[in-house]
Image 1 (cartoon, rainbow, N blue to C red):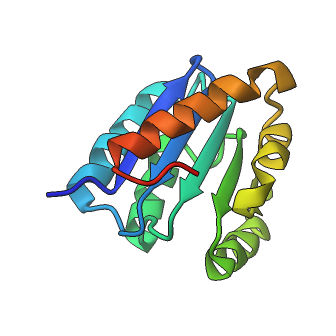
Image 2: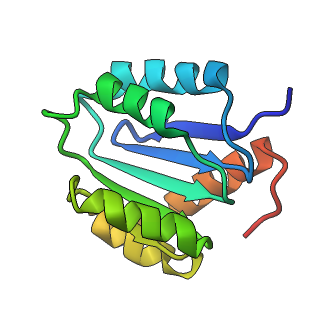
Image 3: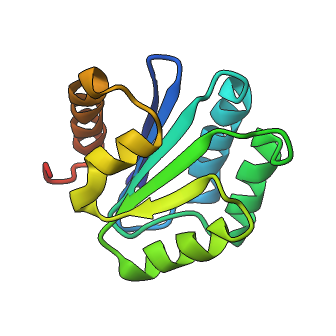
Length: 140
C-alpha cells in the first residue's frame, strides 16, 4: 500500500507532516498519533503541508485524544492549495484558536506564525523536501 503521509519531529520542537492527495489509512494514522502521543510534551508547533489529503473526523478525534486537547497549546499551521481545506481549517479555528491555514505561497508566513526563527527556515525547507520525496511527490 502506498504511503499517504510522511512526518518528522524536526529539531525536537516542530512536527512537520506532509500529506499526499489521498486520505491516510487508519493503520498509517495510528502510527502517527502514537508518535504524537510520545512527543506531545516537547512539541512547540505543527506544520502540516497537504496535497489535498488529510484525516477524517474520527482520525482527527484520535489525534486530539493523543495530544490531550485541553492541555496541548502548540500552534498548528496548515499549508495547502485547497481553498476548501483552508476553509475547513478556518472553521476549526473558531473552536481551536491555535490552528491557522495558509496557501502554499505562504510557507514563510506559516513558519513565522509557528515562531520558527528565520535562520531555521532553510532547515525546515530541506526537511519538507525530504518528506515529499518519501511520498514520491514532486518538489515544490
